[in-house]
Length: 396
Image (tube, rainbow, N blue to C red; front, side):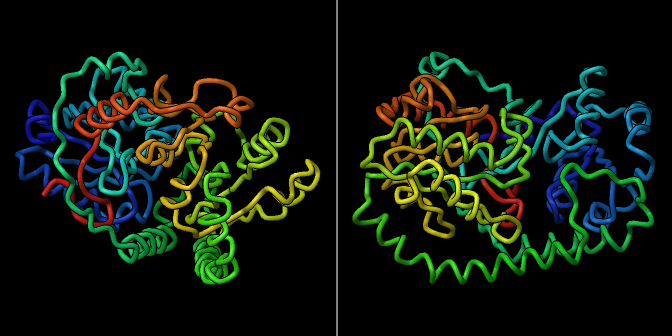
């Protein structure tokens, strides 16, 4: 497993930018100080400020984003920063920070949700996902020596903790908006009240779907077992889609999948779209999928489901089609063929289907289990931390 103290041994002055919503970066700052590091933090909004209550070593950036490059260059020089840490390499301020780090030859690490879920988070050097430096050569992994990865400890993730941290973040983002008038978020920002209402709608929908889709769950477990292809949808505003795929919307992805299925799949096979639980209260593709299926003459062979158990859906399927979701890795774990439609770290010959989508329906192929095991072990050893942003702290 990773030895973080040894990995960070050469760094002395560390800068934290935006972290995941909540107090994770505050805990990380305290941990780094115990290692003897000088730790600094830059806040960009009220949520950042209130969840990093080490006000002596934190600084607020309240100017326009166009000024941030000069601000950061000056900050790095004054504090002699030699390492920058942040959550998500797609955020506007972090894209600027990456360019500054490259110019000044300073290292950076990116935190993200785990590649290997549910017991890991990602802490990867110089980029994640489509910007990852992980080798895309299957022979690299096949030639690695065998080494054992210990069984991970439970991540102790609590949804209530994530919800509370998000509540605190957005509450103070609103209350302190006057202090950070120029803050520029990456995603379309929902004002606080509508955001909460959408979350509430998601909770209501979850209970409705649990009842209304019970018969579909039984059907997919029994009569249609190994007769359908699964398409797990990603969150509608996921950076993975816009930065690491050709699609401009989930609807565009759905349309391509359905058209290919209608033209090339066996008439005996079915198509199952699974909605992402995080987006449950914000968007619904029911009408779009129903209308598209009707126009293609496949309305009796297409299902749109919500809170059905994902591992069971995966194991009972013939194959899984994703853009670049980590569900693809979960599917490979269950020895289910995968076709990726975007850039994914695991899209390697021997792991995923390398041909055209039109051919996937006919012969999705098989997975090289040796390659899979070596790939996963390497990813865990070099990029993953056993823990959670909203559960057990991975550095304890």
